Length: 438
Ligand SMILES: NC(=O)c1ccc[n+]([C@@H]2O[C@H](COP(=O)([O-])OP(=O)(O)OC[C@H]3O[C@@H](n4cnc5c(N)ncnc54)[C@H](O)[C@@H]3O)[C@@H](O)[C@H]2O)c1
Image 1: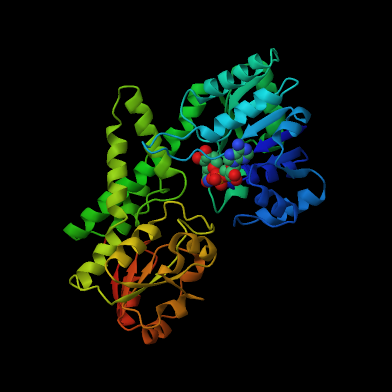
Image 2: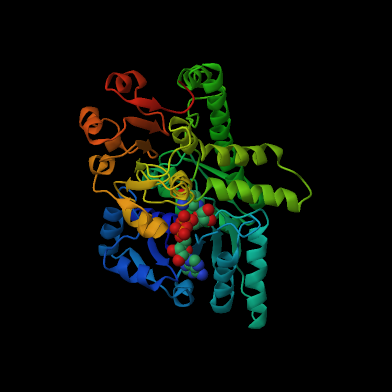
Protein backbone atom coordinates (compact mmCIF):
# COMPACT_ATOMS: atom_id res chain seq x y z
CA UNK A 1 0.00 0.00 0.00
CA UNK A 2 1.21 3.52 -0.79
CA UNK A 3 0.34 6.43 1.45
CA UNK A 4 1.42 10.03 1.98
CA UNK A 5 1.60 11.89 5.25
CA UNK A 6 1.48 15.65 5.01
CA UNK A 7 3.15 17.51 7.87
CA UNK A 8 6.34 15.90 9.16
CA UNK A 9 6.23 17.06 12.77
CA UNK A 10 5.82 15.12 16.03
CA UNK A 11 2.74 13.31 14.75
CA UNK A 12 3.47 13.07 11.01
CA UNK A 13 7.02 11.76 11.33
CA UNK A 14 6.11 9.16 13.96
CA UNK A 15 3.07 8.04 11.93
CA UNK A 16 5.18 7.78 8.78
CA UNK A 17 7.98 5.88 10.48
CA UNK A 18 5.56 3.42 12.14
CA UNK A 19 3.50 2.72 9.02
CA UNK A 20 6.69 2.18 7.00
CA UNK A 21 7.96 -0.20 9.67
CA UNK A 22 4.88 -2.33 8.88
CA UNK A 23 5.93 -2.58 5.24
CA UNK A 24 3.74 0.21 3.90
CA UNK A 25 5.30 2.58 1.37
CA UNK A 26 5.16 6.04 2.98
CA UNK A 27 5.98 9.45 1.60
CA UNK A 28 6.33 12.16 4.25
CA UNK A 29 5.63 15.63 2.92
CA UNK A 30 6.45 18.98 4.49
CA UNK A 31 6.66 22.57 3.28
CA UNK A 32 9.78 23.07 5.38
CA UNK A 33 12.56 22.43 2.84
CA UNK A 34 15.34 22.42 5.41
CA UNK A 35 13.53 19.81 7.49
CA UNK A 36 13.02 17.55 4.46
CA UNK A 37 16.63 17.93 3.28
CA UNK A 38 17.91 17.08 6.75
CA UNK A 39 15.61 14.10 7.05
CA UNK A 40 17.02 12.78 3.78
CA UNK A 41 20.46 13.02 5.41
CA UNK A 42 19.21 11.13 8.47
CA UNK A 43 18.99 14.22 10.70
CA UNK A 44 15.86 13.98 12.84
CA UNK A 45 14.27 17.36 13.68
CA UNK A 46 12.83 16.35 17.06
CA UNK A 47 13.84 14.23 20.01
CA UNK A 48 11.63 11.18 20.43
CA UNK A 49 13.00 7.90 21.83
CA UNK A 50 13.43 5.25 19.12
CA UNK A 51 12.43 7.56 16.27
CA UNK A 52 15.86 8.09 14.74
CA UNK A 53 16.54 4.36 14.38
CA UNK A 54 13.11 3.72 12.87
CA UNK A 55 13.38 6.58 10.37
CA UNK A 56 16.90 5.64 9.26
CA UNK A 57 16.09 1.96 8.94
CA UNK A 58 12.97 2.45 6.82
CA UNK A 59 14.49 5.26 4.76
CA UNK A 60 17.43 2.99 3.90
CA UNK A 61 15.03 0.14 3.11
CA UNK A 62 13.35 2.41 0.55
CA UNK A 63 9.93 2.34 2.25
CA UNK A 64 10.08 5.84 3.72
CA UNK A 65 10.51 8.85 1.45
CA UNK A 66 10.68 12.59 2.09
CA UNK A 67 9.53 15.34 -0.21
CA UNK A 68 8.21 18.90 -0.31
CA UNK A 69 6.13 18.12 -3.40
CA UNK A 70 2.64 17.01 -2.40
CA UNK A 71 1.26 17.83 -5.86
CA UNK A 72 3.33 15.10 -7.51
CA UNK A 73 3.23 12.38 -4.90
CA UNK A 74 -0.51 12.56 -4.23
CA UNK A 75 -1.37 10.74 -7.45
CA UNK A 76 0.83 7.81 -6.48
CA UNK A 77 -0.92 7.04 -3.19
CA UNK A 78 -4.25 5.59 -2.06
CA UNK A 79 -4.46 7.43 1.23
CA UNK A 80 -3.27 10.89 2.28
CA UNK A 81 -2.99 11.67 5.98
CA UNK A 82 -2.98 15.31 6.94
CA UNK A 83 -0.95 15.82 10.13
CA UNK A 84 -0.16 19.52 9.85
CA UNK A 85 -0.29 21.83 12.86
CA UNK A 86 -3.55 23.32 14.14
CA UNK A 87 -2.25 26.04 16.47
CA UNK A 88 -4.60 28.25 18.46
CA UNK A 89 -5.77 31.36 16.64
CA UNK A 90 -5.91 34.69 18.47
CA UNK A 91 -9.39 33.94 19.85
CA UNK A 92 -8.42 30.42 21.01
CA UNK A 93 -10.13 28.60 18.14
CA UNK A 94 -8.08 26.08 16.13
CA UNK A 95 -6.34 27.77 13.20
CA UNK A 96 -7.21 25.60 10.21
CA UNK A 97 -5.09 27.50 7.72
CA UNK A 98 -2.61 24.64 7.16
CA UNK A 99 -5.30 21.96 7.04
CA UNK A 100 -7.13 23.88 4.32
CA UNK A 101 -3.93 24.61 2.40
CA UNK A 102 -3.36 20.86 2.16
CA UNK A 103 -6.99 20.27 1.08
CA UNK A 104 -6.71 22.87 -1.66
CA UNK A 105 -3.42 21.43 -2.95
CA UNK A 106 -5.13 18.03 -3.15
CA UNK A 107 -8.11 19.47 -5.04
CA UNK A 108 -5.82 21.34 -7.43
CA UNK A 109 -3.74 18.30 -8.33
CA UNK A 110 -5.64 15.05 -7.85
CA UNK A 111 -6.19 12.88 -10.90
CA UNK A 112 -7.78 9.81 -9.29
CA UNK A 113 -9.63 8.57 -6.21
CA UNK A 114 -7.89 9.20 -2.92
CA UNK A 115 -8.91 8.91 0.75
CA UNK A 116 -8.06 12.10 2.65
CA UNK A 117 -7.65 11.40 6.35
CA UNK A 118 -7.31 14.18 8.89
CA UNK A 119 -4.97 13.16 11.69
CA UNK A 120 -4.50 16.65 13.09
CA UNK A 121 -6.71 17.60 16.02
CA UNK A 122 -9.51 19.61 14.42
CA UNK A 123 -12.92 20.91 15.52
CA UNK A 124 -16.09 19.08 14.62
CA UNK A 125 -17.07 19.92 11.06
CA UNK A 126 -13.52 20.22 9.72
CA UNK A 127 -13.74 17.08 7.57
CA UNK A 128 -16.72 18.63 5.81
CA UNK A 129 -14.79 21.89 5.33
CA UNK A 130 -11.88 19.90 3.89
CA UNK A 131 -14.26 18.06 1.58
CA UNK A 132 -15.82 21.34 0.41
CA UNK A 133 -12.37 22.88 -0.24
CA UNK A 134 -11.31 19.89 -2.38
CA UNK A 135 -14.62 19.95 -4.26
CA UNK A 136 -14.27 23.67 -4.90
CA UNK A 137 -10.81 23.20 -6.41
CA UNK A 138 -12.01 20.27 -8.53
CA UNK A 139 -14.93 22.38 -9.76
CA UNK A 140 -12.49 25.15 -10.77
CA UNK A 141 -10.72 22.53 -12.89
CA UNK A 142 -14.09 21.39 -14.31
CA UNK A 143 -13.49 17.88 -12.92
CA UNK A 144 -15.55 15.39 -10.98
CA UNK A 145 -13.23 12.89 -9.30
CA UNK A 146 -14.48 10.67 -6.50
CA UNK A 147 -12.71 10.92 -3.14
CA UNK A 148 -13.48 10.28 0.52
CA UNK A 149 -12.65 12.07 3.71
CA UNK A 150 -12.12 10.44 7.10
CA UNK A 151 -11.03 11.44 10.58
CA UNK A 152 -8.34 9.49 12.43
CA UNK A 153 -7.34 11.50 15.51
CA UNK A 154 -3.99 10.66 17.03
CA UNK A 155 -3.52 9.78 20.71
CA UNK A 156 0.25 9.27 20.86
CA UNK A 157 2.12 10.95 23.71
CA UNK A 158 5.40 12.72 23.11
CA UNK A 159 8.16 10.81 24.87
CA UNK A 160 6.49 7.43 24.23
CA UNK A 161 5.16 8.17 20.76
CA UNK A 162 6.53 5.10 18.97
CA UNK A 163 5.29 2.73 21.65
CA UNK A 164 1.89 4.44 21.67
CA UNK A 165 1.54 4.30 17.90
CA UNK A 166 2.68 0.69 17.65
CA UNK A 167 0.46 -0.49 20.50
CA UNK A 168 -2.44 1.93 20.87
CA UNK A 169 -5.27 1.41 23.39
CA UNK A 170 -7.57 1.96 20.44
CA UNK A 171 -7.61 3.45 16.96
CA UNK A 172 -10.52 5.83 16.37
CA UNK A 173 -11.67 6.31 12.79
CA UNK A 174 -14.55 8.48 11.63
CA UNK A 175 -15.82 7.44 8.22
CA UNK A 176 -18.74 8.01 5.88
CA UNK A 177 -18.16 5.35 3.22
CA UNK A 178 -17.48 1.60 3.03
CA UNK A 179 -14.49 2.23 0.80
CA UNK A 180 -12.90 4.46 3.44
CA UNK A 181 -13.49 1.80 6.07
CA UNK A 182 -11.96 -0.88 3.87
CA UNK A 183 -8.83 1.21 3.26
CA UNK A 184 -8.42 2.10 6.93
CA UNK A 185 -8.94 -1.55 7.92
CA UNK A 186 -6.19 -2.63 5.53
CA UNK A 187 -3.84 0.08 6.72
CA UNK A 188 -4.26 -0.65 10.41
CA UNK A 189 -4.39 -4.43 9.97
CA UNK A 190 -0.76 -4.94 11.09
CA UNK A 191 -1.57 -3.09 14.33
CA UNK A 192 -4.95 -4.74 14.97
CA UNK A 193 -3.40 -8.21 14.63
CA UNK A 194 -2.31 -7.65 18.22
CA UNK A 195 -5.95 -7.08 19.21
CA UNK A 196 -5.88 -3.32 19.30
CA UNK A 197 -9.38 -2.12 18.94
CA UNK A 198 -10.55 -0.20 15.91
CA UNK A 199 -13.42 2.09 16.89
CA UNK A 200 -15.40 3.26 13.87
CA UNK A 201 -17.67 6.24 14.35
CA UNK A 202 -19.24 8.93 12.24
CA UNK A 203 -16.83 11.74 11.41
CA UNK A 204 -18.12 14.43 13.81
CA UNK A 205 -17.89 11.98 16.73
CA UNK A 206 -14.30 11.02 15.85
CA UNK A 207 -13.37 14.69 15.72
CA UNK A 208 -15.01 15.25 19.11
CA UNK A 209 -13.44 12.14 20.73
CA UNK A 210 -9.97 13.65 20.47
CA UNK A 211 -10.97 16.92 22.13
CA UNK A 212 -13.05 15.19 24.79
CA UNK A 213 -10.12 12.86 25.63
CA UNK A 214 -7.62 15.69 26.03
CA UNK A 215 -10.15 17.82 27.91
CA UNK A 216 -10.80 14.95 30.35
CA UNK A 217 -7.08 14.44 31.00
CA UNK A 218 -6.49 18.17 31.49
CA UNK A 219 -9.47 18.21 33.86
CA UNK A 220 -7.97 15.45 36.02
CA UNK A 221 -4.70 17.38 36.27
CA UNK A 222 -6.35 20.68 37.19
CA UNK A 223 -8.64 18.92 39.64
CA UNK A 224 -5.67 17.36 41.41
CA UNK A 225 -3.81 20.67 41.41
CA UNK A 226 -6.82 22.29 43.07
CA UNK A 227 -6.93 19.50 45.66
CA UNK A 228 -3.15 19.82 46.19
CA UNK A 229 -3.39 23.53 46.87
CA UNK A 230 -6.13 22.90 49.41
CA UNK A 231 -4.08 20.09 51.00
CA UNK A 232 -1.31 22.59 51.70
CA UNK A 233 -3.73 24.92 53.46
CA UNK A 234 -5.38 22.29 55.63
CA UNK A 235 -2.30 20.18 56.41
CA UNK A 236 -3.09 17.11 54.29
CA UNK A 237 -0.58 15.40 51.99
CA UNK A 238 -1.71 15.23 48.37
CA UNK A 239 0.54 12.23 47.68
CA UNK A 240 -1.38 10.22 50.25
CA UNK A 241 -4.67 11.57 48.96
CA UNK A 242 -3.73 10.66 45.39
CA UNK A 243 -2.92 7.12 46.40
CA UNK A 244 -6.14 6.87 48.38
CA UNK A 245 -8.44 8.04 45.61
CA UNK A 246 -6.47 6.41 42.75
CA UNK A 247 -7.03 3.00 44.33
CA UNK A 248 -10.74 3.38 43.68
CA UNK A 249 -11.18 1.49 40.40
CA UNK A 250 -13.83 3.97 39.27
CA UNK A 251 -11.18 6.70 39.44
CA UNK A 252 -7.92 4.89 38.57
CA UNK A 253 -4.35 5.98 39.23
CA UNK A 254 -3.40 7.68 35.98
CA UNK A 255 -3.26 11.43 35.42
CA UNK A 256 -3.72 12.22 39.10
CA UNK A 257 -0.30 13.76 39.64
CA UNK A 258 -0.33 17.33 40.87
CA UNK A 259 2.43 19.58 39.59
CA UNK A 260 3.27 23.01 38.24
CA UNK A 261 0.61 23.00 35.53
CA UNK A 262 0.08 21.15 32.28
CA UNK A 263 1.81 22.37 29.13
CA UNK A 264 2.71 20.96 25.75
CA UNK A 265 1.32 21.50 22.30
CA UNK A 266 -2.00 19.76 22.93
CA UNK A 267 -3.81 20.21 26.26
CA UNK A 268 -3.67 24.03 26.42
CA UNK A 269 -4.69 24.54 22.81
CA UNK A 270 -7.29 21.77 22.72
CA UNK A 271 -9.00 22.95 25.92
CA UNK A 272 -9.11 26.47 24.46
CA UNK A 273 -10.45 25.25 21.13
CA UNK A 274 -13.22 23.21 22.76
CA UNK A 275 -14.30 26.19 24.85
CA UNK A 276 -14.39 28.22 21.64
CA UNK A 277 -16.37 25.58 19.71
CA UNK A 278 -18.95 25.62 22.51
CA UNK A 279 -19.11 29.41 22.43
CA UNK A 280 -19.67 29.37 18.69
CA UNK A 281 -22.58 27.03 19.31
CA UNK A 282 -24.11 29.16 22.05
CA UNK A 283 -22.92 26.95 24.91
CA UNK A 284 -20.55 27.58 27.79
CA UNK A 285 -18.03 24.89 28.86
CA UNK A 286 -18.04 25.82 32.53
CA UNK A 287 -15.85 22.95 33.75
CA UNK A 288 -13.20 23.55 31.09
CA UNK A 289 -13.06 27.26 31.78
CA UNK A 290 -12.18 26.40 35.38
CA UNK A 291 -9.65 23.80 34.22
CA UNK A 292 -7.87 26.55 32.29
CA UNK A 293 -8.06 28.99 35.18
CA UNK A 294 -6.57 26.50 37.63
CA UNK A 295 -3.78 25.71 35.17
CA UNK A 296 -2.86 29.36 34.74
CA UNK A 297 -2.76 29.75 38.51
CA UNK A 298 -0.70 26.58 38.90
CA UNK A 299 1.98 27.78 36.49
CA UNK A 300 2.62 30.62 38.94
CA UNK A 301 2.84 28.71 42.20
CA UNK A 302 6.52 27.77 42.06
CA UNK A 303 7.41 31.42 41.73
CA UNK A 304 5.05 32.22 44.63
CA UNK A 305 6.87 29.69 46.82
CA UNK A 306 10.21 31.38 46.11
CA UNK A 307 8.68 34.81 46.67
CA UNK A 308 7.35 33.73 50.05
CA UNK A 309 10.62 32.08 51.07
CA UNK A 310 12.54 35.32 50.47
CA UNK A 311 9.72 37.60 51.69
CA UNK A 312 9.57 39.23 48.27
CA UNK A 313 13.27 40.21 48.21
CA UNK A 314 14.21 38.46 45.00
CA UNK A 315 16.19 41.13 43.16
CA UNK A 316 19.79 39.97 42.71
CA UNK A 317 19.07 36.36 43.65
CA UNK A 318 20.24 33.51 41.42
CA UNK A 319 18.21 30.36 40.78
CA UNK A 320 18.60 27.16 38.77
CA UNK A 321 15.92 25.38 36.74
CA UNK A 322 16.25 21.63 36.28
CA UNK A 323 14.17 20.63 33.28
CA UNK A 324 12.67 22.89 30.63
CA UNK A 325 10.69 20.56 28.36
CA UNK A 326 7.00 20.31 29.19
CA UNK A 327 7.56 16.68 30.16
CA UNK A 328 10.42 14.14 30.13
CA UNK A 329 11.70 12.37 27.01
CA UNK A 330 10.87 15.19 24.65
CA UNK A 331 12.53 18.43 23.60
CA UNK A 332 9.12 20.06 23.13
CA UNK A 333 8.80 23.28 25.14
CA UNK A 334 5.50 24.50 23.73
CA UNK A 335 3.47 26.03 26.62
CA UNK A 336 5.93 24.55 29.14
CA UNK A 337 5.59 25.81 32.75
CA UNK A 338 9.33 26.66 32.58
CA UNK A 339 8.55 29.51 30.17
CA UNK A 340 6.14 31.18 32.58
CA UNK A 341 8.52 30.72 35.52
CA UNK A 342 11.56 32.14 33.67
CA UNK A 343 9.52 35.16 32.56
CA UNK A 344 8.42 35.89 36.13
CA UNK A 345 11.94 35.42 37.52
CA UNK A 346 13.57 37.68 34.94
CA UNK A 347 10.92 40.35 35.47
CA UNK A 348 11.74 40.36 39.19
CA UNK A 349 15.47 40.78 38.60
CA UNK A 350 16.44 37.16 39.37
CA UNK A 351 19.40 35.64 37.54
CA UNK A 352 18.41 32.31 35.96
CA UNK A 353 20.56 29.31 35.12
CA UNK A 354 18.93 26.45 33.23
CA UNK A 355 19.65 22.84 32.40
CA UNK A 356 17.70 20.22 30.46
CA UNK A 357 19.19 16.96 29.13
CA UNK A 358 17.61 17.37 25.68
CA UNK A 359 15.78 20.69 25.31
CA UNK A 360 18.75 23.10 25.53
CA UNK A 361 18.68 24.04 21.84
CA UNK A 362 14.94 24.52 21.96
CA UNK A 363 15.38 26.64 25.12
CA UNK A 364 17.69 29.02 23.28
CA UNK A 365 14.81 29.85 20.92
CA UNK A 366 12.68 30.87 23.91
CA UNK A 367 15.18 32.48 26.28
CA UNK A 368 18.01 33.69 24.00
CA UNK A 369 20.76 35.37 26.02
CA UNK A 370 18.50 36.16 28.97
CA UNK A 371 19.46 33.05 30.94
CA UNK A 372 22.68 31.13 31.56
CA UNK A 373 22.89 27.63 30.04
CA UNK A 374 24.51 25.08 32.37
CA UNK A 375 26.22 21.87 31.30
CA UNK A 376 24.62 19.68 33.95
CA UNK A 377 22.58 19.91 37.16
CA UNK A 378 25.67 20.50 39.30
CA UNK A 379 26.97 23.27 37.08
CA UNK A 380 23.50 24.84 37.20
CA UNK A 381 23.34 25.12 41.00
CA UNK A 382 26.66 26.87 41.66
CA UNK A 383 26.03 29.93 43.91
CA UNK A 384 22.27 29.71 43.61
CA UNK A 385 19.65 30.75 46.14
CA UNK A 386 17.15 28.10 45.01
CA UNK A 387 16.72 25.18 42.62
CA UNK A 388 13.45 24.52 40.81
CA UNK A 389 12.65 21.04 39.51
CA UNK A 390 10.29 21.41 36.56
CA UNK A 391 10.63 18.28 34.42
CA UNK A 392 10.98 14.86 36.04
CA UNK A 393 13.76 13.49 33.81
CA UNK A 394 15.21 10.24 35.22
CA UNK A 395 18.66 11.78 35.63
CA UNK A 396 17.25 14.31 38.12
CA UNK A 397 15.78 11.70 40.44
CA UNK A 398 18.76 10.82 42.63
CA UNK A 399 21.30 13.63 42.62
CA UNK A 400 24.09 13.82 45.16
CA UNK A 401 22.48 16.16 47.67
CA UNK A 402 25.68 16.61 49.63
CA UNK A 403 27.49 17.85 46.51
CA UNK A 404 24.59 20.13 45.66
CA UNK A 405 24.42 21.52 49.20
CA UNK A 406 28.09 22.53 48.96
CA UNK A 407 27.63 24.21 45.58
CA UNK A 408 24.52 26.24 46.41
CA UNK A 409 24.54 29.55 48.25
CA UNK A 410 21.20 28.89 49.99
CA UNK A 411 19.79 25.36 50.37
CA UNK A 412 16.31 25.83 48.87
CA UNK A 413 14.73 23.17 46.65
CA UNK A 414 11.36 23.83 45.02
CA UNK A 415 10.02 20.62 43.51
CA UNK A 416 7.34 21.18 40.89
CA UNK A 417 6.78 17.44 40.29
CA UNK A 418 6.89 15.97 43.81
CA UNK A 419 9.73 13.58 43.01
CA UNK A 420 11.91 14.12 46.08
CA UNK A 421 11.62 12.87 49.62
CA UNK A 422 10.96 15.66 52.10
CA UNK A 423 12.66 13.86 55.02
CA UNK A 424 15.77 13.03 53.03
CA UNK A 425 16.14 16.63 51.94
CA UNK A 426 15.53 17.99 55.42
CA UNK A 427 18.23 15.65 56.75
CA UNK A 428 20.58 16.86 54.04
CA UNK A 429 20.04 20.41 55.29
CA UNK A 430 17.66 21.71 52.63
CA UNK A 431 14.49 23.74 52.86
CA UNK A 432 12.20 21.71 50.65
CA UNK A 433 8.97 22.84 49.04
CA UNK A 434 6.72 20.70 46.86
CA UNK A 435 3.14 20.71 45.64
CA UNK A 436 0.33 19.83 47.99
CA UNK A 437 2.11 18.92 51.19
CA UNK A 438 4.14 20.61 53.88
N1 LIG B 1 2.37 16.63 19.30
C1 LIG B 1 1.56 15.73 19.85
O1 LIG B 1 1.85 15.10 20.87
C2 LIG B 1 0.21 15.46 19.23
C3 LIG B 1 -0.52 14.34 19.63
C4 LIG B 1 -1.76 14.09 19.06
C5 LIG B 1 -2.26 14.97 18.11
N2 LIG B 1 -1.55 16.08 17.76
C6 LIG B 1 -2.10 16.96 16.73
O2 LIG B 1 -1.45 16.66 15.49
C7 LIG B 1 -1.28 17.86 14.70
C8 LIG B 1 0.19 18.05 14.39
O3 LIG B 1 0.89 18.27 15.61
P1 LIG B 1 2.47 18.22 15.70
O4 LIG B 1 2.83 18.39 17.12
O5 LIG B 1 2.98 17.06 14.92
O6 LIG B 1 2.82 19.58 14.89
P2 LIG B 1 4.26 20.08 14.37
O7 LIG B 1 4.21 21.54 14.47
O8 LIG B 1 5.34 19.33 15.06
O9 LIG B 1 4.29 19.63 12.84
C9 LIG B 1 3.47 20.17 11.85
C10 LIG B 1 4.24 20.13 10.54
O10 LIG B 1 3.35 20.48 9.48
C11 LIG B 1 4.12 21.18 8.51
N3 LIG B 1 3.20 21.90 7.60
C12 LIG B 1 2.46 23.01 7.82
N4 LIG B 1 1.76 23.33 6.72
C13 LIG B 1 2.05 22.41 5.78
C14 LIG B 1 1.62 22.18 4.44
N5 LIG B 1 0.75 23.00 3.85
N6 LIG B 1 2.13 21.13 3.77
C15 LIG B 1 3.02 20.31 4.37
N7 LIG B 1 3.45 20.46 5.62
C16 LIG B 1 2.98 21.50 6.33
C17 LIG B 1 5.01 22.06 9.35
O11 LIG B 1 6.13 22.53 8.60
C18 LIG B 1 5.41 21.09 10.46
O12 LIG B 1 6.60 20.38 10.14
C19 LIG B 1 -1.90 18.97 15.54
O13 LIG B 1 -3.23 19.15 15.14
C20 LIG B 1 -1.85 18.43 16.95
O14 LIG B 1 -2.85 18.97 17.78
C21 LIG B 1 -0.32 16.33 18.29
